[in-house]
Image (cartoon, rainbow, N blue to C red):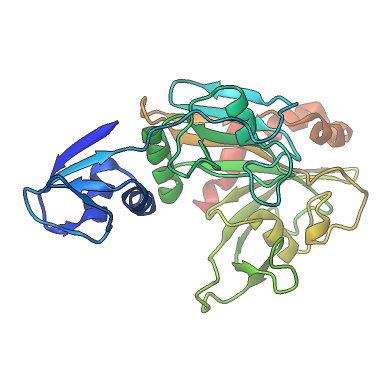
Length: 323
C-alpha cells in the first residue's frame, strides 16, 4: 500500500508523516529507517530530513508477508470479537504473547500465524499484530491488529489513553481503603533485573518510568478478596509491583511477595478492553469472561454479588473518581 503527499510546511520528515499518516513518531521513525521514504523520487532514510514546501513524498507501507509458526501449536484461544481490522482474544494463562530468545514454546503470535490471520507488521514480525502485551501468567482481553492502518490508529489511542483495560485480581488481603491510587516510579530491580520491577518515590533518575495505577475493592468474603485495577500508564508488571508497595499480593505471584497457598499462575485477568474502532469510529467495550481457575476461587461468593460487582457499569463507576 502506498501514500503520496505534498509537503505544505517546512518541517522534519518524521513530523510531517506522523501528522499525515496518523502514526506515532516511533512508528514513523522505524518505517523511514527500515523501509525508506521517497522524497522527490530520491530514497530518504533519515527521519530528521528537512522538507521544503511542495516536496513530493511517497510512502510504501511494508508488505505483510505470510509466515509459519515457530513451534507446533497444540492449544486454542477464544475469539471475543473479530472484523476485517482487528481481533480481540481471551488469552489463556501461562501463554507467552510473542517469541524471544528465551522462549522455547509456541506463543500467541504462533497461534495467530497457525490460524492464517493477516497481521500488522509495524512492530516487526516477532510481534506481528500486537498492540500491547500481557504477562505470561495473566489471562484475558488482548487486542490484535490485522493491518497496519488499524495498528497505527489503535496505537495512538494507547498514547492518548482513549484505549485501555479494566483488570480483575484476586489478592491475599483486601485493600486498606476501598479506592486507592498509587503513583510511584518503576525501575528494574537491582536484585533481579531480568524479571522484576522495583519502585521508587522519586522520578529524578532518567531511567525511571512514571507509573500510575488505581485499585478498587469489589468483594471480600470468607478469605476471598476480589479487586479491580486500572492502569494510567503501561509499565512492565505495574499492577503487581504497585500492589506489593501496598503490602498486598496477587494470589500465586511469588515473584512479588505472595506466600500463601500455591496456585498454577498469577490470578490477574484483563477483564474489559475498550477502544475507538479504527473504521467505525465508535467506542467499543469487549468483555473477556473469567477463566475456570479464576472462577473456582470465587465459588465462596454469592453469584448475585459477583454479577453485580463485575458488571461493566459498576466497574466503570468505580474509576470515575480517578479520571
